[in-house]
Image (tube, rainbow, N blue to C red):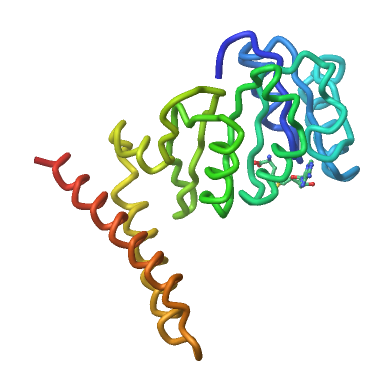
Length: 215
Ligand SMILES: C[S@@+](CC[C@H](N)C(=O)[O-])C[C@H]1O[C@@H](n2cnc3c(N)ncnc32)[C@H](O)[C@@H]1O
């Protein structure tokens, strides 16, 4: 994330991200936002414990609603499903007018989020994998940009993320299960089976490419 940002952490819950951004000096102003009173109060407690009560700004809001006049240049959405994130971004067209940068960590439905980004003119400029308690998490940095719109996995492949081979194993196994489920359906959908096969092939090809890294 760029230094000196005016950031909004959407779905902040405990408010750890805003606290981190302030304590490290990464942001000059931070909005801690959540749709729930309970989570927002947790964020307030975190801020109070760290002496940041007067520094972090709190907003009880659905997604990015009501934040358009706050000068936000970076929005962080972490720990929500990709579909929820896509909905939040689509309901806030002002982020495109302002060129708001996005830091995203979807818990699921990466493909839905990628499609939403691309439809709205955003390109994934950076991506990273994080491994915690045996589970992989994808983190994306997206900016408004004309031209190529690479998928997250392509960015991770290009930058040779060291966790990518293991993550691909996980994706391949998930996709194999999906495909066998589709084939066992009472009335198999041939188009969907074909798409699932293609996706599995692409994942396997990527896995092959990562093998070259070790040579
Ligand atoms: C699992 S927590 C993630 C917390 C934190 N961002 C993280 O990554 O650890 C998800 C939070 O998103 C909030 N949330 C869900 N939908 C939201 C929405 N439409 N707008 C704002 N917050 C939302 C929930 O209330 C909850 O506090």
